[in-house]
Length: 269
Image 1 (cartoon, rainbow, N blue to C red):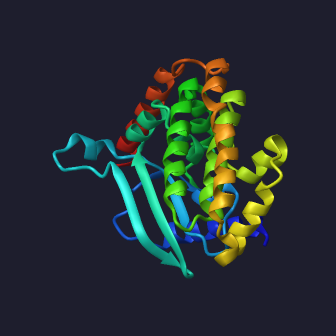
Image 2: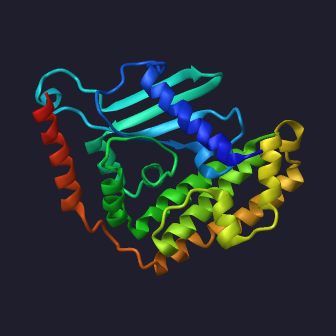
């Protein structure tokens, strides 16, 4: 199965979904950027995996100044194109940047996702700003994500390769980010280049094959969870030793970016 072809198709279908109006709900007037998250970003999509669109939009100053409620978050579920389910969630830029400054790993992964469905021309600038907003406290996002997923995996009476892969993905992404300051959410890339765990490729293959092949025995599940815990245990010590700053270093630049884009909506209204 060619994962690059799967991802290329997902990007194309995502673009079609935004352009065609097939997504339920009223879309924002101005998307800043939209990328793909989920299994496609994490390196183990199936040909029929849902397409998770995530990003940010810019509310016009005119709407913010009025009395009417504004659409701070656009959330659309249940859309479908060529038999593939497409979900889309975007936040107004003010909320989005607020999340960025509060150690939100989801936002960082969306900004740096290479699977770009829409870019109004500012994504590279936003990425540069996002790099300056990364702090060592992002560790709390990855610790929380790991522990939530761990509970789900252990509670599941029919554990799957996919569920366990999420454990390894989040631990590897968090460790790499804390060590290097670089956001890499693709499990396969991380494992092949850095972590080199011998069983990851087989787990990915079993997830992609699906069905019974994607199921794990309780014994397999427990062994893999123990291996993932070994990585998770390194997160806090790695954060403590990280060269990343203790606080956001470019808050004023983020504020200027928001104000500039907000004021531009007055010129186009």
